Length: 86
Image (cartoon, rainbow, N blue to C red; front, side):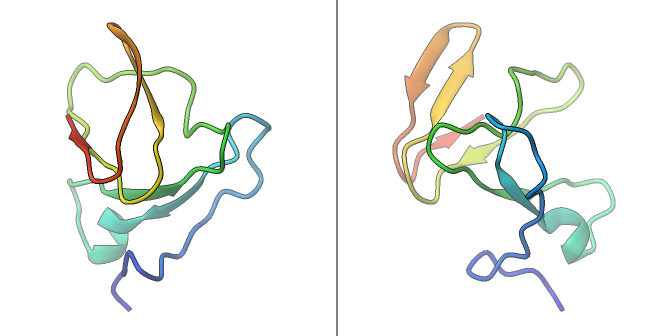
């Protein structure tokens, strides 16, 4: 079955406090070999990861619902629903 963002198969319930996000790995589920795509569900006050960055790849965030907090070297800011950030 192909993945669907309206009915994601979310995993990750065993994560520690502060990182109790759940994730659906859409890229591999859709058959991608070199393209990653994930759908994250973040409860209020939780994060997907500690602060991190990548040297060799880009990430794209698309906010489907809610107003998550984005941390960058320039500081923190609240994202809006529908916002796209690279």
